[in-house]
Length: 74
Image 1 (cartoon, rainbow, N blue to C red):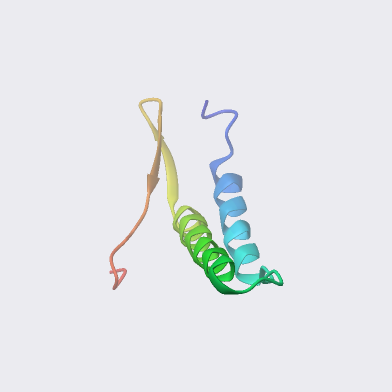
Image 2: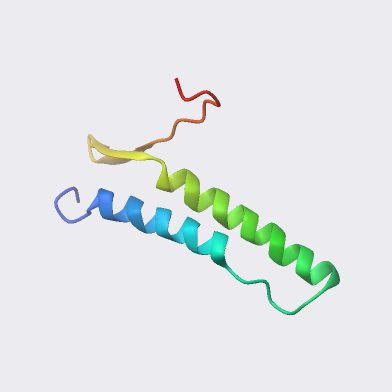
């Protein structure tokens, strides 16, 4: 699988998706529906950004995504 999966390109797509969510226009809705849309956009951004910040590797046939969740990044 390592030879057919370009992990750098995959991670780039997630970074691009996170950026697209940030630019997503709000639909012309109000009230609870608007709040659900905003909450979903925040979740989408978080998910895409986390994967987009990961470092991918293959270990014993497993795709490993290393994600640094430390707040100080040291």
